[in-house]
Image (cartoon, rainbow, N blue to C red; front, top):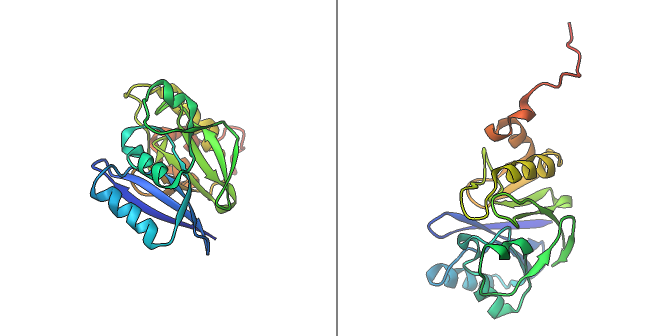
Length: 211
């Protein structure tokens, strides 16, 4: 069974997730945004106290509020850091990364993670789907009731909308969404309630009305 532990880091309220399988000491960390100082020390100490050994870091994108703890984790554990290669066209990083591609399957710490490229918020943004566990980590691509901003360097609103509509909204309705900020949601809730995705709320003209 998948266990998800969420941490909220830095002044931007960034969500970091620690993924483990029941009974396993290996962990996968999504977007460790804890920068140097007390937050980072607390997080590293928590990992040790829990007897967890991180096996990999998954980055949804490379904005500073999502990557603050990456170098410390990589220096301590020597782990791979997966990220969309296009992020390097905008962001300068002080840690090594392993590029991911759309549709790629990562086998990490007993987890099967599917990569979905979702450019728009940033050029190389990705989401990570654990299809069997009905969980997806969307970073700043999709939130509860909204989508990511596109006014920062490398942002593109048209690409973001295409990413969300074509790559995410067709997934199973009961997939839980774990975003980079704010509360979790689901595919079904975003289809119905997200004002940026209103086409999903429009009736299909091909269905005959019932008298």
